[in-house]
Image (cartoon, rainbow, N blue to C red; front, side):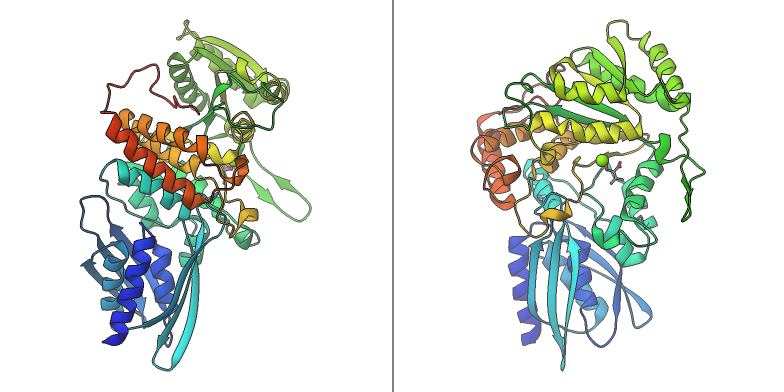
Length: 473
Ligand code: IPM
Ligand code: MG
């Protein structure tokens, strides 16, 4: 009985510190169990403002699958109860701590757990997602929502061997919107399956074909020469479902490797429409980027974009080769408005435009398709920042603002989140943009500003012209 109380107390301590509880938190608890090996099959927790946290857990233990559900005082409390019920034994929790792995840049954190069961003591550890947590806490402060979590990438490989388990895909398909931290890390680089495969399959299986990556100068220090980035306000629209990323056949041997760059006219057409429509809400200028002097796929690209452009006579269209465009984006960033380009060039230019804002940690993104949209910050898993607690959660938080606008129909709240981020950036900065704040301090300040702003402003009617990424420091 004492042991249960001890576990409960420590769990509640953690729940106080962590707003969201991840599969891995629980997986760690469970897989750390001595004597028999337990495997977490399914774990769903529903929590949010005005909701009683409830969790359902399915555990494979002793070769048998057990499922249990329970409600709790907080998400972790809710999650632990069904886990204990399914396992049928108590654990004495000796140590439980979380550590930011990549300072939040990739949203990874590590949970380390030490448990005692009878005479045996064992330690388990697993990754969790912390800047995602920061961003979702901001969403939670805006409005009540139901959160369901699935694993993808490295965590999913560790748990199931598959970087995109069917369960995760089903969960995403049944959601209004999907929020993703980042995938990848050196730990999985040498393995037979890569975490990135999970993300690429998710994009393909959700039919996501247009990825929007806005980048706007907001008065922060940038690596560009003084004043060069001023007035820069770009939107990279990246084709996401075709090109060399997905073309078959592809393969590698020790002496040769090959990929196929294939692009259909339809793929170009639908992303071009997204770009022209976006341009109409901005400065009505589209730059289409390709390599038509060398590649057939680019010649088709150019022809189709030109054809679609005729339907938007009010939007100015120009074509650029990718080598020239990459240079011009840094030389004269202010002359670009919307850049539409294929999957590979969009991947590269999407990172390059971070130079006009100051840090890749600042950039949000959304991907549109046939079903639910996918929201992910542009930054990757940045393993070099591991464990330092200083990553910039701005990209993730602004991604939440895009989610509020595009999937939840609340552009008013999106503007408030952007204003709260802009206000925070005035005083509090993480080291990537010349400050000393930790991820946690920054997020705390965003929350403070958010409550001030929400108190000060009642929601306004969204203005079509400014209803996108209209924020600044
Ligand atoms: C991105 C990333 C991904 C991509 C990786 C992680 C597969 O770099 O979203 O830009 O190349 O698309
Ligand atoms: Mg990339």
